[in-house]
Length: 145
Image 1 (cartoon, rainbow, N blue to C red):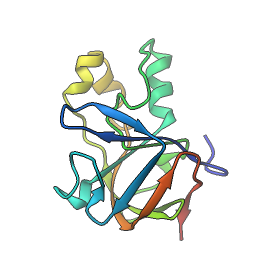
Image 2 (tube, helix red, strand yellow):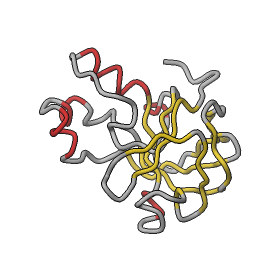
Image 3 (cartoon, rainbow, N blue to C red):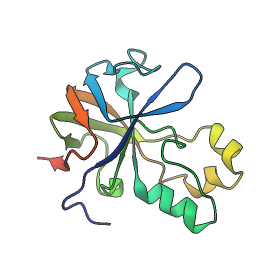
Image 4 (tube, helix red, strand yellow):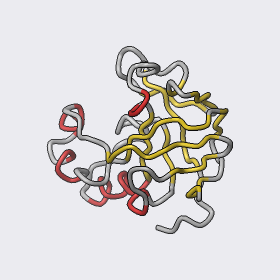
């Protein structure tokens, strides 16, 4: 997976029933993603960014899941293994700072019992919003230097 020409593949918000709802556009500010159930709760972990690589890993093991099933807010084809805490991603007009690798949630085992172990280091990253704005499907994604 290369980061050149990387883009936002899909956007999601989590509603109060823990469902991910696909969106074409989301609005980010320092409190997170507006309309998301996690908005304003923990700004340092307010955005979950996942790579298509996580879905490919699952698919390679016969686990077919739709985008959004991993609980991500932003799905991109950017290789998240190339970034670490403190680094920043530019996504359209939005800037996110990586806080930590994503922790695993129990809901993944409800999808398939093998999923938590399979995605232990590859589910995605938690990020905080450094520069808010509107994010669209198809926006460019790059490492901000």
